[in-house]
Structure formats: C-alpha cells, structure tokens
Length: 174
Image (tube, rainbow, N blue to C red):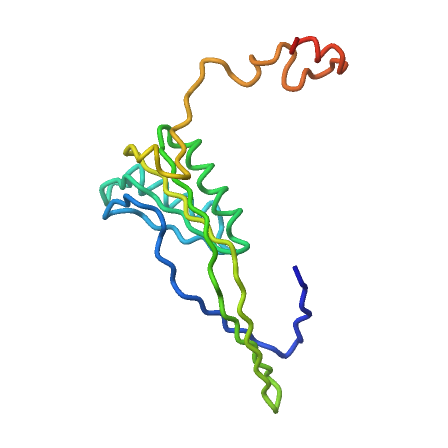
C-alpha cells in the first residue's frame, strides 16, 4: 500500500457507486447500519439494539444489516460480534466484495490543480437475523450454542494452563 503525502492546501471529494447488498433473503423491514470510519460503536449498537429488541415506539425488527467499506470493515465486524454476544440466537450471513471509489483532489491555491484517483476498497456486509437463514448460503454461521461449560472449566488450571510448564500443559493433550 502506498502512502501519499497530502499537501496542506488540498481538499478531497470522494464518490463511489452505491453497491447493492449481496445478501439474499433480506426482510422488508431490515435495519441497515452503514458503518463509517468515524462511527462510534456505542452509538451504532445503541440504536441497533433498541430496534432489534423493540424500543416501545416501533415494533422490533428481525434483521440488522451492518455494512462497511475500507477502514470501516474491522469496526463493522466488531459491531456484529458484540451484537451476537448481547442478543442470543442470531443467525449470520457475511459477504465480502470490493468497491471502487473515485477521489478528486483539488488544490485550493490561486491556480487550481485537479487529480483524480480510483481506489478499490474491501467492503463487508453482515446480516444478523432472528429468523433462520439458508444454511447452504456461503458465509452462513448458525447461532452460537450456549455451553454448560464455561471457558474456565475447559482448562484444569485456567486458560492456557496458567502457571504450568509447557511440558505439564502438553500432558493434558496426550
């Protein structure tokens, strides 16, 4: 990835074609959450949680679609993972794609200079649904099962055999 030094007296205008969501089986009342690089996770999740659980003013929605492009991809994944932990029984379908963005750089000096850059950015759409989704759909993940065993009880001495030598830990796997 190249790093371009941005002159101080430049402004940028970024445009991109809106891409249709590649996730099949969307409900008509799906809540679309467009995650941006500067979005606050607590704001996104606060709104999405109130809608999927029902806030008293509107009926609860059964599906939430998180989407993000470029630097917002990791934040999009984080939102979906946190919501799956807070709301049990959510089915998931994830789709990855690329989106082409056109950036027009213009100098703000007396003799304006313009430069156009086309960038291809990764994009992700994550559908979370209370209703079952097609398990044959690529990118499908079933709801997480609630185990009677907690993480701590899987290991005799805590995660990674805390305080044990590697040779002692190895004995647990033989």
